Length: 602
Ligand code: C2O
Ligand code: CU
Image (tube, rainbow, N blue to C red; front, side, top):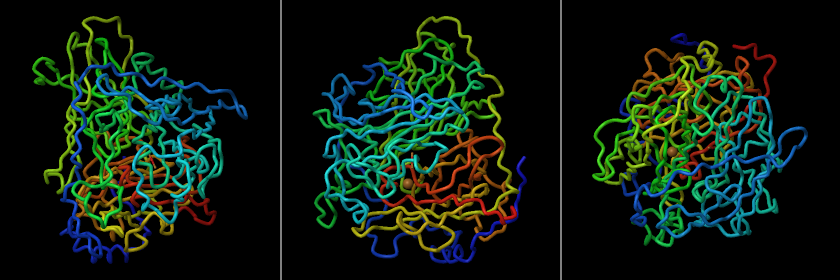
């Protein structure tokens, strides 16, 4: 059990109070009040939608494909060695849509799955073979002093999301490189990335992270899964082989010619000459459900248990999933289908399976490892239904800008099948709790609204070290030392939910509370008084949902913990995983410092 309180928050309290003073009282919260210091005339309640509609595609015509597994090309220094080329290709996303030009790892979208084993490092050379021109509209005002927009070549860098790995191989935004490494960014260090794979088996994923264009590169198709396994997990008897299926959920929009549609401006601002063209948009929500690279697909299953590795690889959209029995002729759902049994989150298996009573929430960038038992549904068709609003939660969600995406995919359960010998054991993994009484520091991290030089809304991250929010290039403020335990308290003072992500580490969520009830000055957090984590938020995670008006507290250990994970020092990133936010300054560095010998372990 966690102790309910802890002593020892050593943060600088004064600036928190200054911050509260600057934003109105903690009680008033001022979701709207916490805005730009100067002239932000666009509020969040203005339309964020674009008027674009994708071609009306008939649903449920194609089977969900499997991304396939990529094999190493050989060995390097005794480890399997992969070469993965990023290429532009044409891909059929829907039978009634002309082929779509996408960017794919190994020439496919989504990229092939890398299968790795705990304790067995691998090396990957990510190769940029993309054309010189970007596929999508690039806004050259984003980090314009740091990015050589006038030179040719598309910048890429691959981040292993969820990887507990050396900083040189993390794939940080400024480690970008152009075709054949002709040009490289300031933090580029090595062509071959070394993934030590010294962490619990988990559903990781790789995706592009290039400075200022991550949203475009991922939207173009640069994402894939990285599954880490070990013998112990394999001995559990979970559904495996053809009964273990990756599902990469993404929303996309298309033009009539089949090309990907991505907005060049916020709706209604096209004629506004004060805004750059093309311009980054505050959020992007596509109107077409794409699963493993196919629009509105269906999946044939047998009446037995399946394991699904679900990734939310959308730019901004959350999913809240539930299965329903579906009548295709009337397009109606009446009865609930089988429940999801959650067995793992971002960073690995849960201690025990958790039945999801109602909806399975998967925030942007998150993974859900689930088992579904179809044995009572032989011969049925099921709908994977999503009721997450877009934007997800907050005062701005009911302003007429909702872009829901209720229908995700269908499941066709065969009328008969063979024996199911798989099982979901009641004990899955050892997940030791990070003890609250060992905390070295608590960080109060306010998330606020501002505006950029063009009056466009800007979501920013702050630090308890200073009262004003920071941009990406402000000096680093989060510098834990190796083997420190910290609480990161994300306080959302904006009008919508944000999925907050940390590189390198997996944290454990302590709980959430209304901002009005949070006193960052207090010496202790009363963990027992917090709203406890939902099943999706238990165990090891690297993305956590932070709702507006709330503080979400996570506890994180920087280094090997009870034989799990490994020690790394150096520079990493933490950010909102809504890609439009991340590109537009809702991202900050953190640096893990070497262990200080005289720290005495406060
Ligand atoms: Cu999935 Cu910094 O990213
Ligand atoms: Cu965000």
